[in-house]
Image (cartoon, rainbow, N blue to C red):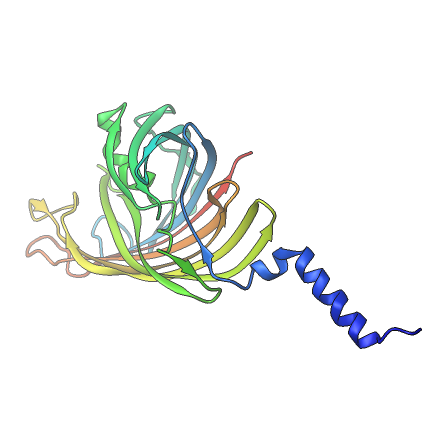
Length: 293
């Protein structure tokens, strides 16, 4: 007796869906949760490159440009956990940075340490960091405390559908050097309220990959800088925007890949007698992260 081909096709299709739950899993709400086991270590590579344009500085030709590159090998280790909170140690295994002006040769930037610096934080299940709570180098701590917590995006609270959005805060550590005869260093830690978007999911058994994107704008603020004008430090207005894409892995319990670009503008207030009327710096910085196997 011949079977009804339509009925057979429907039954076969249903059996395929039942036997391959990953095909259905990508359609249901997904719950992010940061739950690293104690003593779990994840090794990351963080690479940045950027260019800065200077306009209106008496010591520099207009539209002078500076470029920099950096690479940090970082180990994230869960030291302890309890009550949905995790003590996280980030160790900078090695760090290298280079800098050049107006297309000249790159030169190495002297850093206060060459590896082994660690910073500790407390994180919750949304991967929201607080701290730092400790470090093995108080002198270098100020240089990396913001950077250490910046290579992640706060996870959404509760389950979220593909195409769903959530709000989060994103920190961008911004340190630049104005290349004068006596270089001036300006350090600004910028906070941007961002909107995250769950773009897609790829379910692979015990390891689900979540593809995320985010965009946001830095809140305009006036900050003190080390740049000297008229016998004192010059205040600067800072604003900009940031966007990025990240891949979250449930198997690694970490962001395993991503790229983020920030555009940061600084305008220095005019100081009578300083020769500066409208000094501006525009920086474009791109950072890439990936897990090191």
